Image (cartoon, rainbow, N blue to C red; front, side, top):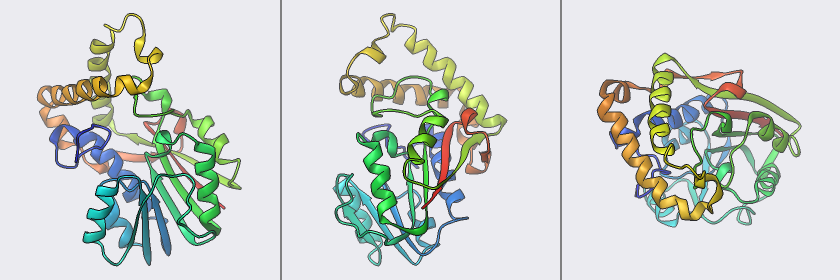
Length: 256
């Protein structure tokens, strides 16, 4: 299931800092969500239990048919759809109170259509919660991402369709930033050999396998070198900041 580091495991110890960061977005979301809820890009179902406990009905859509089928078996009272998106051809207009999509939009080729389709399936007054890595704090190119966004870039995209966009960011305490700095130093030791800047010049598909291998090795090395730091990080070490420009992830709440 976790053949790529792009699907962060909740079980692999070296993935823990990233897993907790992703989990935080879901925990934060339960302050807002209720009613009929759609998750776009549910992946392994990291936040599924949290979301289903805080809404009347949960619908998930994801391109990974294997994962969708597994989640169907575990949560038979909810709706799971395997499909490539956008468009959202299987969903009715004006049918959801909330849509959440965490760490997905950076993988979408037509991001404007993606936002337009989410706006379309939301009821009037409905809200869209979205998170994505902050390009400003990314340490290297991630070839699994079609693009990444700076704070103003994502805001400008969302404002094309949503009347209100509240901008926040996912940030961490001293423990988190210590991990970030250790990771930054470790990544620099790898990228210093890229003297021709090939990571930004080659097609991203060519770089995906080398990136996965090096990313996995780097995470394991960080865990071995900083065992307590990596193991001890919890979702409570992250917090929502009102300064998205300087945050690890962008976390925006949009209203139709």
